[in-house]
Amino acid sequence: MHKIRDILRLQAAHGLTGRQMAQSLGFSHSTVLSVLHRAEALGLRWPLPEEVDDAVLEARLYPPNPGRSLRRPEPAWEEIHRELRRKGVTLRLLWQEYRHEHPEGGYQYSRFCERYRRWAQKLDVVLRQPHRAGEKMFVDFAGQTIPIVDRMTGQTREASIFVAALGASNFTSLEGTLAQDLPSWIGAHCRAFEFFGGAAQLVVCDCLKSGVVVPCRYEPGLQRTYEDLIRHYGAVILPTRPHAPRDKAKIEAGVLVAQRWILARLRHETFFSLDALNARIAELVEELNRRTMRLYQASRRELFERLDQPALQPLPTEPFVYGEWKVARVNIDYHMELHGHYYSTPFTLVHETVDVRFTATTVEIFHRGQRVAAHRRSDVRGGHTTIAAHMPA
Image (cartoon, rainbow, N blue to C red):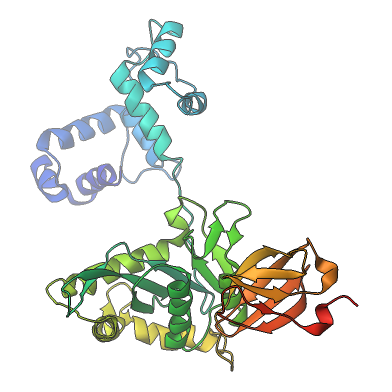
């Protein structure tokens, strides 16, 4: 409509010919003449009255054709979308039912499918996630692995790549691990916190078994060692919903950038140890973080130093001590078993269920949240560690 207004303006103000206006506005000569004839028949002159906006101008110049057929009956798209979730229900079946109700004026199958897909596209609307400085750290393992070759045997072992990224600055950390088990998951987090020099308020993770034992949309079951780690750094775990990658779009993009700008550059290099791989990754990560991003016109490191770094929580003074948890039952001799060794508990807990946290050197036993026993860990299978105070009189 703004170009149609230009046609009326150019004719009234400059007296251009139809061909001159067509060449200036990018219209065909016939289109310009059609607009001028329609405006003259309706008595429209430039300048147009204020009440004639684009909608009114279009309605007057191009009124609906009264000879066109009546509007076709519109299907109930909400009900059709709901019915498609049923097993065995197809769009063709729903179209046949629709045509049975409207045999004369209903849509044909191709038009029916086109209008349904156009309607359904508006359902998949996403929320843009704002990221405050120092608020979130996103973590995940990349899908791509890197082989590490044993010099002696020539056998290869695939190294997984742990990726961590801060929300506000996109500052990224990468590290290779030999597995995706709980010790590797915990150790990679500790080194990521050290790399950033602080801890974010929230740690957003995927439903990896090392972090989330029971994936659930509403009440996910978290790995207790992972909870201990995040609590040690003063943060909170925020697991994403199962099968909802948009909840962690920041790390999805970070993994993609890491695969394209770092891992792809390592495809022709051979590594004989995990330390050599991580040393090479550290060089490329430093280059990535110093590279200027076109959207922000600043590097990840510049944004990190300006946004995230001042807002991160300070690291704890004591390092995190890795410890795993186990649920055990106290035997009739008031001892519970851990890896083939038996540790005593107060005799009043016979047949009770207790929580056991064990590290490389200690074993702690908890009952209903209270620590009831602590032992030095022993590797003697079949042996017993007994505290005299735990024995009955």
